[in-house]
Amino acid sequence: MDHPRIEHRSTRNDALGFRPLYRQVRDVLVKRIVDGVWKPGETLPNEFNIATNLGVSQGTVRKALDQLVTEKFVLRRQGKGTFVASHDEARIMFQFFKLVPDSGQGEFPDSLILDVKVAAADKKAAAALALRTSARVVRIERIRSLAGRICIVERILLPRTLFPGIEKRDLPNNLYELYRSDFSVTIVRASEKLKAIAATRREAKHLGLKPGAPLLSIDRTAFAADGRPVEWRVSLCQTDALHYLADLR
Image (cartoon, rainbow, N blue to C red; front, side, top):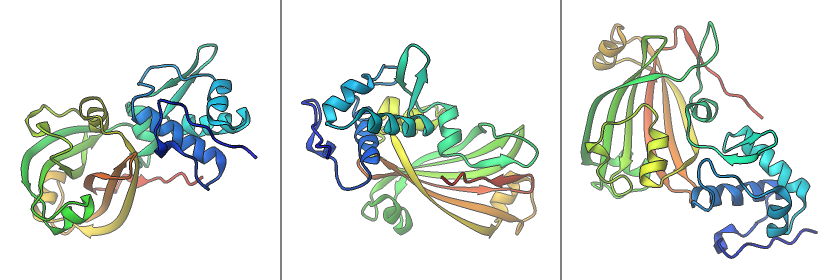
């Protein structure tokens, strides 16, 4: 039986638990990436060194790395090794953006910021982000386009304590990479709830629809590596020419 050992740069939170061993190794490697032990673009140690460090077989490490490649946490380059990936558009497309045109392959949407402000969390925001009611949150509203057509109205709420001053910035299209690079907050997973709703007058105006038109609401809470909820976003999507694609594995 394999007995895990943790290198001196790691913490007790690296300790392996009772899930399938390759999943435990995968989680340890993700934590080290998030903690900055291995930075974006940096080469990971080879499979033998990781296996020796954790006290598991190379086959277990290889399976864990295969999972990270699939999830686009790391990239393999023939003859050069395995590298830490960033929150680039390709990874976000695979892991977090599930809307695909009916007529073709997925693409990363363009974004236009409508409003950014700091406000007190209401009960729903406080519950979603595990905050006390009236805690300060940053509220971002934007519209998103695919192939030049506006199809999403989006509201994003962030705990201001985790993202100080973000409301004063020119926000990029790729917010998850900004969170990682400038605020040391790496999104590792998200939970989504889907629901059909009717467009309000404001949403209908942005999307070029009549009030009451059907929309798909994607209510997502995103989590950092330590399990904290760090972003709550609600995306209201016009889906007459789009569909939500979930690749179940």
